[in-house]
Length: 335
Image 1 (cartoon, one colour):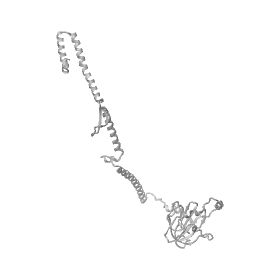
Image 2 (tube, helix red, strand yellow; image 1 turned 30 degrees about the vertical axis):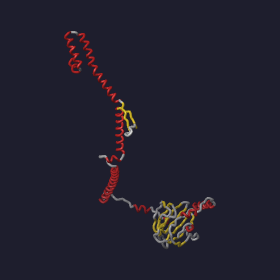
Image 3 (tube, helix red, strand yellow; image 1 turned 30 degrees about the horizontal axis):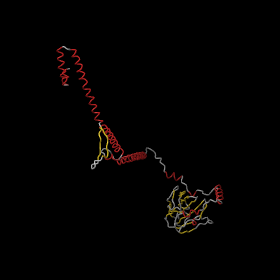
Image 4 (cartoon, one colour; image 1 turned 45 degrees about the vertical axis):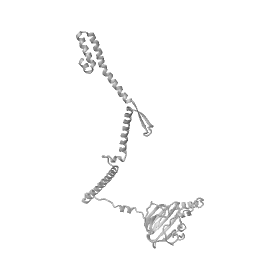
């Protein structure tokens, strides 16, 4: 115990020498008291030093400094901040964390990551996805083709019987010939038409067809070879034109019939608003099918010389409203 005190403190050396004298003089009660005091001093000196050191660290962290920004020319104080080491450390740490988080988000969710080695570009990912879809489709087509070729090989070897049916023969069986269809109205239909005509005769709100005169587009320009004649039941006008000339729709509407007939050749019918129907017969070809929507002036057919009831290239044009024929010359200029 004496040697430990000697190494730690010069005062302990003096105490050690005094202890030795007291031992030799046999004053044990004084020795016991002195030992107790010296031990107490030796034990409590390091603890006080630690507390003092902790207070110094705390004092350094909380010691306030002033950061002043001055005008270099006039030395006028512009801005000043009260800081300490602890505030600077906490603020710097938070700023670094926010900066790292913002940089991570910027790299993860923006195209900037393409400039970092190890990241692929968005264009390459899109191309890879498209190629994957195309490859999958090609694999499916290849499987179907291989299955078809396997069936062909089986048929050629005679291992299975080919029971395939010609689709054209099936369609031909159910194909409808318009020339053989009876389009004459039945008795009930005639009575209904008479009732409707009688009601509309005194209808004050009925609109005249002349309201749409400016909206009608001439289907084809040419010479009138035969006009409208109710007595001879010629409910149309025949317009002579060069074969192959475009035939155009007179107004917006829907194609309700587009087929070949024996007597009138290629025929197309268009339904317009206000129950108006335009009919185009003896066409050389048809450019629209049933159910198609057409616009005013749109090409729907070409002038021809088809059907049994024709004497040359011309357009047989009819105009109907509410089931009644109208003279097209009253509404359309064909010159």
